[in-house]
Picture 1 (tube, rainbow, N blue to C red):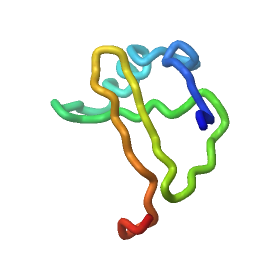
Picture 2 (picture 1 turned 120 degrees about the horizontal axis):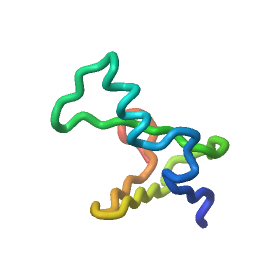
Picture 3 (picture 1 turned 90 degrees about the horizontal axis):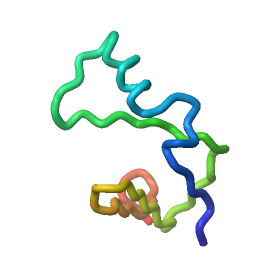
Picture 4 (picture 1 turned 45 degrees about the vertical axis):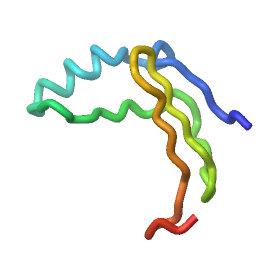
Length: 72
């Protein structure tokens, strides 16, 4: 069951604007990851839930939610 779907176009500030602001006080290096958050309300996750992140031009990223220590 899909519970949330959004685009970076839904953000208050665009990804380039956020990157520019972050670059003013942090040095970014190759491989760094910037988490943009979500423009919607938080979704409660449960163990065994599957998360799929899709971004144009990149392969899909799929993860299954697990309890700390790797237990499902």
